[in-house]
Image 1 (cartoon, helix red, strand yellow):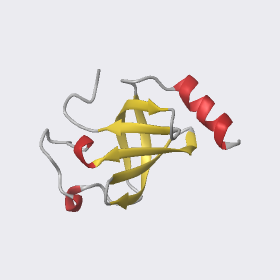
Image 2 (cartoon, rainbow, N blue to C red):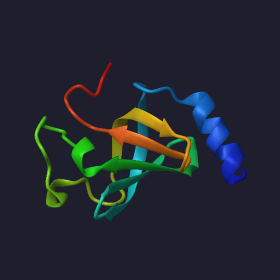
Image 3 (cartoon, rainbow, N blue to C red):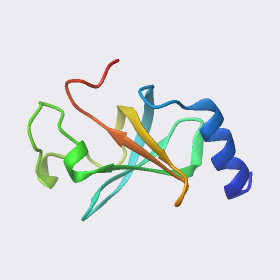
Image 4 (cartoon, helix red, strand yellow):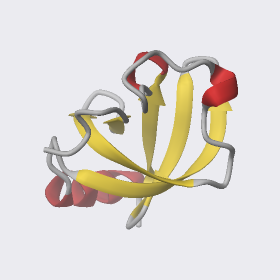
Length: 94
């Protein structure tokens, strides 16, 4: 699937506030990069301030290791860079 059609498929399937499952594929200075189940070709990012599993800021040392499966909430679908923005925290479930 091309990048554009993968993005269109993700936009059609995902809604802001929905819970998704994915695998942590790497850590970056800005946050955690996740491969979302059913949408592996679309970048998904949990930025540093959106990873708050205990309701408080987490340090990079507290981030889930690469290869870990996590659940997160879709916070936004950003058109300009075709990216899924995710968040993790106590208000995670709608």
